[in-house]
Length: 340
Image (tube, rainbow, N blue to C red; front, side):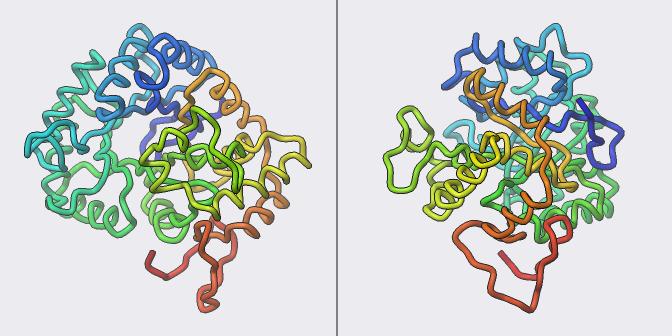
């Protein structure tokens, strides 16, 4: 396993981060612990969870699995999302984030969290309130590094500026949605992170299963798939005809090369020099085994050109690049001055 520096920190993390969103829900506790143990044996030292995953059960299971293996692991969790019906049981406020940090530590039976994310931006709360609260988490010793998830480039830039101005701990990494059919973050977020030495830990590299090739255009969804269960995140973020068409073409391309579409999609993300680590979210051991083997696959220039022909750099499926005033040359240097 080759480890990568997390932004400007000296922390090294595995290029694949084990995501635990399925654990304690569709994946049983026993199976979840088996997958965590297998990942650690394989050299993965980066595990990602969140308070909201299965109402805290994911954190509970993660804590059990790492109880005797804590040293050497980089554990990340998140706060900010709705955890109850009370008026203060969500948000980027000091009150909520501080409480949820304590709850996460209790569920995982840990003394500290390595990386603590604010899960989504809260535009009703001044960013400095969120940053001051998270700075206090670091000063207290309960958090090693702070981070943000689902932040647009302008919001991340604002947060970095406020941190510098107020002498607060700054975000060490950001967690964006990124995959072959969602390349929007290549436009502004990736160049910003590269310039400011912010780590990038992306999620949904398989577009919530779209890029595995199991969904066929015009056909019924496979039983027990996320689409068949009407998963809200799947329907809102990924389930569009254009993505199914792209996935079908990738599947055919991979068949001609004798490689797995899912491994190809993961390897394509891993080949991006802007990426520190990508989060996989296996539901079964078979899915985990398939995902981890993507580390053995090398993406060629031919592969890059093929993907660019399907979804141009900086774009997402279902939209065509028509503005010739801002040409793009390669995803690693894509700088399209256009608001998304």
